[in-house]
Amino acid sequence: MNIFFEASSVQEVCDKIQECLNGRKLGDLVSLEAKGSELVVKISKAGTSTLTFASSAKDGGLQFNKTGEKIALTHRMFKDEVTSKFQQVVENAGGKVV
Image 1 (tube, rainbow, N blue to C red):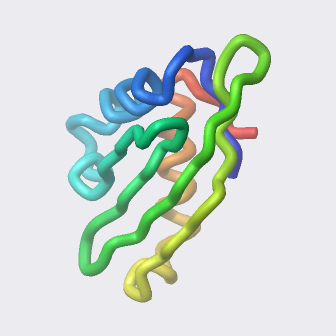
Image 2 (image 1 turned 60 degrees about the vertical axis):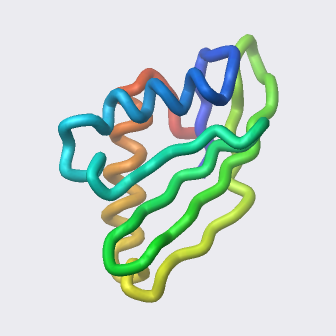
Image 3 (image 1 turned 90 degrees about the vertical axis):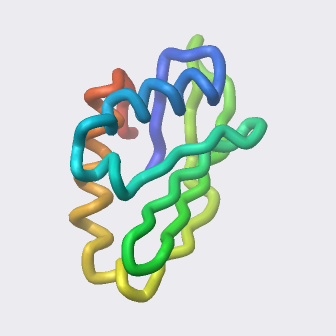
């Protein structure tokens, strides 16, 4: 999964996504962290899954490419469902899934 945001920093993107997660059931399960040029997404419930995205400047914004994925055994059967919901949140936050 690759994501594009018209933003100038990883923290700005992290804040936009977190704002869209607030008040949603998915928001209780997902936490985001800006680590330098990386965006780290953690999904915690009966185990912890981690997605890592590296950012690079592109077309006046930031392109995020998934560089790492650790999926908890208990999450594997729900991976497609959670990925789909996360993509919706990204789009609601102003990003584009590419």
